[in-house]
Length: 86
Image (cartoon, rainbow, N blue to C red):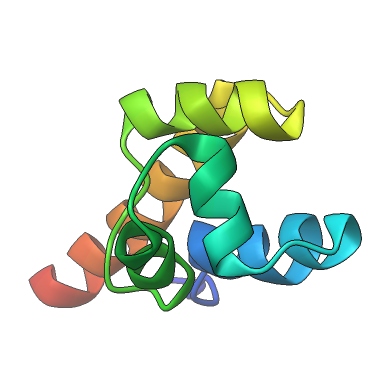
């Protein structure tokens, strides 16, 4: 069986691609998203996932699609589940 490499946590993608490209720090993104800075911090540090509800917020704030974030989170969660089951 071919082992798939661990997918990148969507929070890391958020930080390294979107926040960096837009020149946003965590506090600025939190303000735009209408949430606490701690939530953004936990997401970008991989301690919290991106819920479908928050994916809708990112869609609006970043001009992405909610499906992008939900898909990345699902792939990450599934990889983690497979590791736990092995």
